[in-house]
Length: 150
Ligand SMILES: [Cu+2]
Image 1 (cartoon, rainbow, N blue to C red):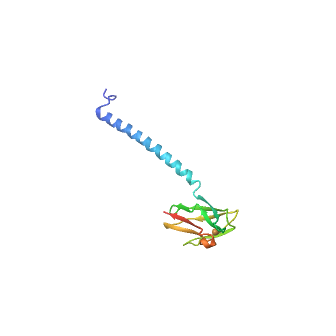
Image 2 (cartoon, rainbow, N blue to C red):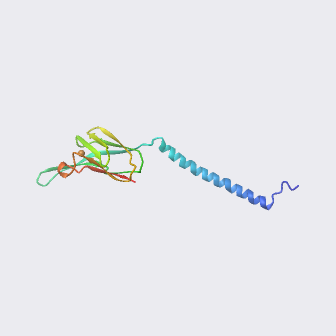
Image 3 (cartoon, rainbow, N blue to C red):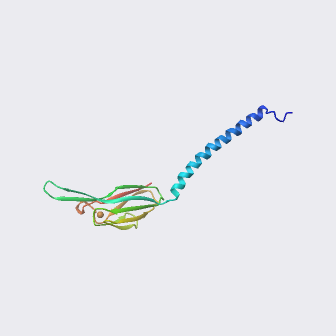
C-alpha cells in the first residue's frame, strides 16, 4: 500500500510544480496587460500632433506696431520610423507656405483651415519646419518649428 504515500522526493517535486504554475500565472497576467496596451495603439497607428499658427503683437514706445508669427508648439518629438500626421491649424496670418528642411515636404497653411502633413523620418536628428514668408524678424518671423527625431 505504498501507492498513496507521498515520499520526500515527490513532495519536493509537487512544491516545485506549484511554484511553476504560480509564476506562470503571474507572468501570463503581466503579458496580458502589456498586450492590451499595445493593441489599443494598433487600432490607430498614425499619431496625430496638433499645431497652430500664432502671432505676437505689440506697440513700441514710439508707437510702432510690431508683430511676429510662430508655430505653437515650437518643438515636436517623433520616434525614428514613427508615422505621424502633423495637423496645423491656421489661426493667425492669412497664408504660410511651409517646407521641412532637408526633405521634399512642402505645404501651405491657410487661415481657418487645417493642413495635414504626413511625417515619417528614418534618420535621427532635428528637422526644421520653416515658413517661407516669415523667415526673419523683418518679415515678422522667424517662423520655425523644430521636429526632433530620436
Ligand atoms: Cu508664416
